[in-house]
Length: 275
Image (cartoon, helix red, strand yellow):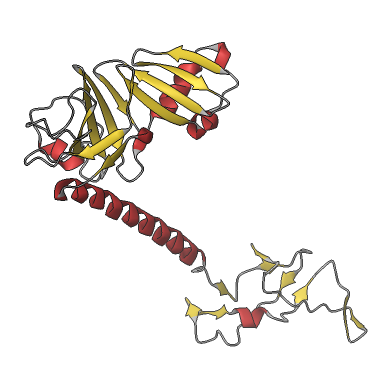
């Protein structure tokens, strides 16, 4: 089953069973690879026909992009001097780009190149020195399509570029390095958050209650050498077998004997809470 819709920038067909979206772009359109799923979802929400399609559905669909009715799949980088970062179908007969000019031509620009350029005044959300993603311009039969935040690593929108030059490989390597750095920063942040949560020691004047609302009598033993404002710290070993006063579950058996004065063993998972 297929459904069609359109916007000012493109028309599209959704193939629900195949989980694909065919995007037919108009000339001189700028699309953001990072936001394209949201853009499509917002567009289809204007039509009651698509109310059953969620944003997650759109994100799960593969997007195939067309320009001038030609499917854009990517290409190989030109091997001609001074034409680095131009991609397409190689053509040895072409003395300029070394590419078939009757087929789509792809021009890759790194974000730092866009910042330095003064000849291109087109708005670009890639103009960020911390952004390792690229801008990809696509030319065909006098039409132009610009893709912002294009990823070489992910082959955004199923457009795969085969890098051969040191320039394009440097762009790819930079994207890889920044992605790895972001992952490391994320892991460090998670680790720091976990570490911070453990930096709140239990002191003798704190109040800890067992699950039955009894108050744990805190007494520092091994933690006496550590203190905060003169108040000794209570270590986990000090909590083990700590007496609990006022516990509603005041019957604990040990060696078949019953104690009215309750001593609870604090388990490893610490089924207690500080207040």
